[in-house]
Image (cartoon, rainbow, N blue to C red):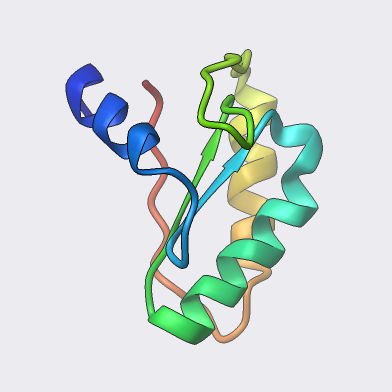
Amino acid sequence: MTPERLRRLLASGEGPTLEFKRSTGELREAMEALCGMLNAQGRGRVVFGVSDQGKVTGQTVAESTQRDIAGASRRIEPAAQITTSLN
């Protein structure tokens, strides 16, 4: 995702298919939100490193962070096609 596209996404604010989380410390809540979006809308996006107000706070991303997110997303049932990206 380009920086400009990310800015537009954040400016749109949270909604039925978009959730902001400060960090992966909120991973469980993020997966619950994503599951709800998938059930209601069939799609959704969670952005880590962003406050509820859409302010970028940042997130350190280690290999273990990526594994944690991948593992949590695999537990969503029914299984969904989930992609992750680093920006």
